[in-house]
Image 1 (tube, helix red, strand yellow):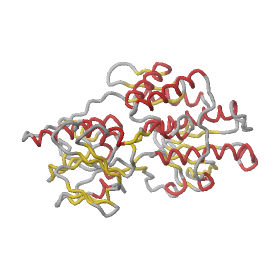
Image 2: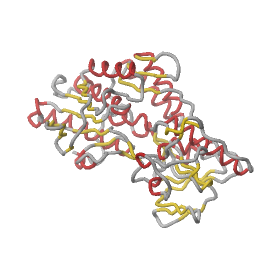
Image 3: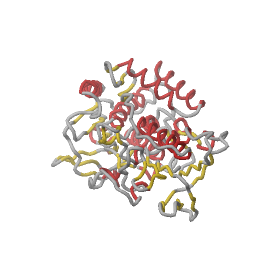
Image 4: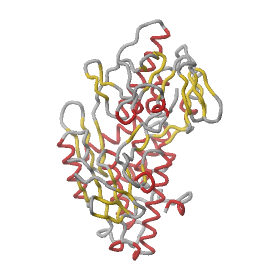
Length: 414
């Protein structure tokens, strides 16, 4: 099992107690709950609140072991995984769940100067940078246009929408509770989306609600506005240059550059691995690829790829595990079928959209409570659930002094 994200953990959970020996390989010794990374980046949660040790998750499972290391390559002919430290692991069956990585899509300067939000390290670095910018604006307002920082968020998907809403709330609490001398009417959060609406995977009603809510909360939403270039000081939009204290990249993901992209097999758009209906690799029925790394088909009647969301990762990981058990029992594998449970995105406190497969869209406070409940269910670890629940409940009542700490090498980040 390569990868301890949503797909990898789901597969291992379905292999617990089965007549197999499972080895999980990951270069992090923890699982990250990615949907809440934006709250770490905006000082709503601590990094430890959204991460949990892999060894602890499966500590009581006799047939599961963890190997801390980076898988560098896979030799599918000899059935061997080569690790970056020079070691190797042989396998009878392999599940590749290496996920994706930030996609900068050849925008000049984006990879070098923008701040992505895909890993826990990204979130910590982004939080340091944002808080450092606020402190700098308090001490030296003359260094900023209009005496206050401008934050640019690139990408109008769920991550970009959630990050924009949380940034506005952070600016408010920084002034109101931390007494930073920043004019909240001069500081700006600008959300740039190349398409014609936010939350493109949602229904039009949800997109309109997200845009209207962000605008009401003083987010400058700009649709049909692709980024032409990113520099150390801002972004270029066609012929217009915009100065920014931070350019936060939420413009999408790619599989290119990951282990899955290096496999000598067919790949589709964004480097995603092309699969058989049962999620195996063509010519290698012992190799499964799941989650964001794969072009997971919706089902036998819908060959198009599923979106790269957590539910697809969880369901595809579970399916791969079940097929391994069937193979061991000498049974034929079955095709994967995705069960769409809907989509959710939060815009800030008391505001979210929950789009179920059927029925009306839940929005506002009801959608927000549904979003909170779902994320608590999928968050790993009782301690993390308890801490996050208490944190959210306290923030629901007021905006207390939270983990707005500048840590690590912030000087290198600014």
